[in-house]
Image 1 (cartoon, rainbow, N blue to C red):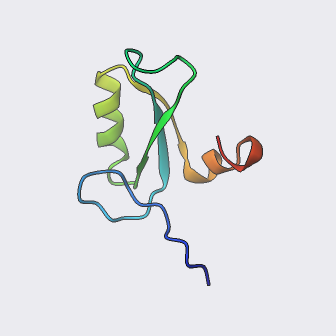
Image 2 (image 1 turned 60 degrees about the horizontal axis):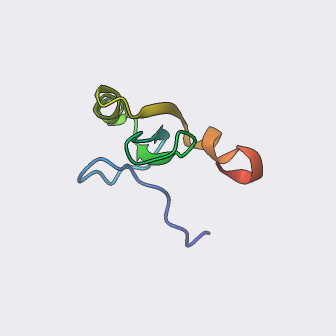
Image 3 (image 1 turned 30 degrees about the horizontal axis):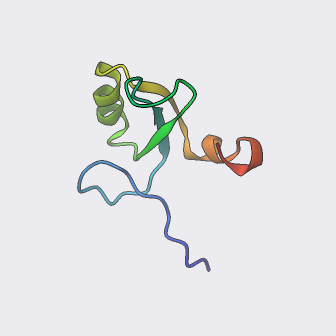
Length: 75
């Protein structure tokens, strides 16, 4: 049994397990290749994606498993 806490959704007040990674960047603050991440459960994926999308920040949405399977185990 692992003592590691599973990742949880980034939506305010949500304690559900994360399923999705929303990769984003704010071009006024970050270099083009930089990616910040929010985690989302199935229920909040669309809401968080829309929040980032209307601001032009959203770059990618992938499952947590896909994100963790990138080169070296994560991105």
